Amino acid sequence: MEFLSMICLSFAVVGFFCFLISSTRKFAAFGRGKLPLPPGTLGWPYIGETFQLYSQNPNVFFASKVKKFGSIFKTHILGCPCVMISSPEAAKLVLVTKAHLFKPTFPASKERMLGKQAIFFHQGDYHAKLRRLVLRAFTPEAIKNIVPDIESIAVQSLESWEGRMVNTFQEMKTYTFNVALLSIFGKDEVHYREDLKRCYYILEKGYNSMPINLPGTLFHKSMKARKELAQILAKILSLRREMKQDYCDLLGSFMGDKEGLTDEQIADNIIGVIFAARDTTASVLTWILKYLGENPSVLDAVTKEQEAIMRTKEEREEKALSWADTKKMPITTRVIQETLRVASILSFTFREAVEDVEFEGYLIPKGWKVMPLFRNIHHSPDNFPDPEKFNPSRFEAAPKPNTFMPFGNGTHSCPGNELAKLEILVLVHHLTTKYRWSMMGPQNGIQYGPFALPQNGLPIKLSLKS
Ligand code: HEM
Ligand SMILES: *[C@@H]1O[C@H](CO)[C@@H](O)[C@H](O)[C@H]1NC(C)=O
Image (cartoon, rainbow, N blue to C red; front, side):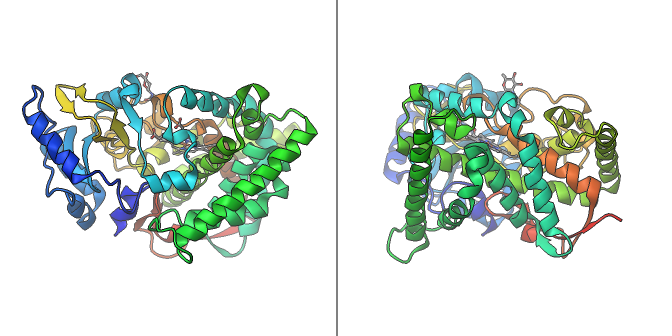
């Protein structure tokens, strides 16, 4: 069952519904063509190799395939013929150089939940425009200004955990949700926080449920919550239009006069950004606490680095952390990089060939799914010696291009990566300078919910350092 939720990391429980008939016809047609399909086995039609995937650790499945067939191979999972790729060169072709031939692809039920007009689902002019609007709200220049506000959210979060047993992932989700709202709505955010949170939590519960829209089902409730979210957003939009002020947050960027986005397009993209921002960053933070907890010498080095920054600030009688301070944290930054590599919370992504593509001597037929396997690239000894070892100092040298892609690469790469790194640094600063924590319960399991996560969300107990 574990793999089911993992392969669905933002994708469907029910798969993509590629139809058996059309894909069988395709195989016949390509048998006559010149270029061969990539090596690999397709297994039984429709069921394909999904079964093998479910019955073993997914990383073992991918790794054994790579060993047998090389870095490009075909398989058939969740109803779709699919080409998996795990070399830096091939990932570059799919994500960067030939990105126009590989469109993002999600099951229809996910589109309905996030909203059809959200950035992830698009290509071409509409995508480029959204991307420009999102990027300008998350450039270093733009997020510099909210460092003190992020800091106060971090300080409050940590204070609220003190002295009790907490589920790290759940608490980190609250933190990253609040930071996401701040980056979207600016300081106005506090007024809507509770309503938005309530609706969003119902919405996400339906996210990995069967997409059956009947009264009483999780999916139905979540579609209702989605409508309510859109109503709250409509209210915020109309209030802002009355104010006639300029805002430099994401909503302000979307609402620019020249941009001409409809309210529906804005709503779909706000919900989309919350979705992209919250669980991803929260699970990385959870892994950081785990790796720091397991590696005392690394924790010690991070703590010393952060204490030095704290002391300098005290000497200068500066209160709030600044953007410049966060640029003086090389050790902590390498811990974040190594965590992103080892945990590889987004194990892979999906694309679909928009036409027959000739690819490294093989044919990828139109309509086939293509999956760059980030985790395999990050765990290949060719790219990272002794890959299972948590060793932040390996990042003292920059990784080779397209061997380290926690935020993807190319036209759909993560526009929120600067914000994600910033909010992690700010939280780790206060965590390591003021608190100690111990991990409670067994520590070896991994769960996928849908991102890779330490077992049970890493229960910890946090206390103030004396
Ligand atoms: C550590 C946390 C995060 C990780 C590991 C992460 C990773 C990724 C990756 C790998 C992609 C590309 C997916 C693909 O190519 O199919 C992506 C896209 C995206 N991310 Fe992030 N992300 C994180 C945090 C955030 C945050 C904080 C935000 C928003 C503030 C955000 C917003 C987005 C958006 C909007 C996209 C879609 C871009 C597009 O389709 O053009 N992410 N993210
Ligand atoms: C993305 O691809 C470009 C072009 O190959 C490369 O220069 C860059 O280093 C890549 N980025 C990452 C994060 O690997």
